[in-house]
Amino acid sequence: MYRELREVYWWNGMKKDIKGYVAKCPNCQQVKAEHLRPGGLSQDIEIPTWKWEDVIMDFIVGSPRTRRQHDSIWVIVDRMTKSAHFIPVKVSFSAEDYAKLYIKEILKLNGVPLSIISDRGPYQILKCIGKVTYELDLPNELALVHLVFHVSMLKKCIGDPVSIMPLEGLGVD
Image (cartoon, rainbow, N blue to C red; front, top):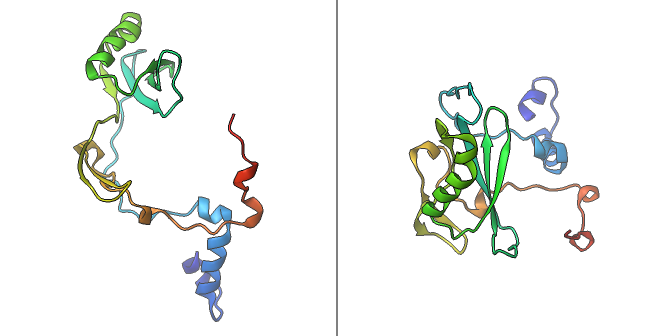
């Protein structure tokens, strides 16, 4: 923002004033441009030609346990029709459990897909860096993902007091 404005305007302490304004502006915080290296050449994802030939799967974890002790949801989505199956699972399931469940719930209804896209690990923890910081061994497909997450990677946001909601007023449904 400073570079664009300095071409047209200038005053003493301009950079400091703009920095303070941007830090307090909620819109500026939400649309702030990232300064990361480019992700490389874009790769086209082929458009599916038939339903259930390309599927995407992911997991919703951290849910409360059900009566049958399920604590996660396995989401399987057809890329063409966007129809989805939501299957209750347990975090402790093995790959064999998932394979049996896939055959029972998906394969018998939709047939064998040509491709399955998933970012699911498990990823080996290379080293524990802090209480909640780990270095992971990620596959080549996730090469652009940073191996380590640390609190220092979070961005400072000076919020507008009007838009801040006190925690006491929040309830969980």
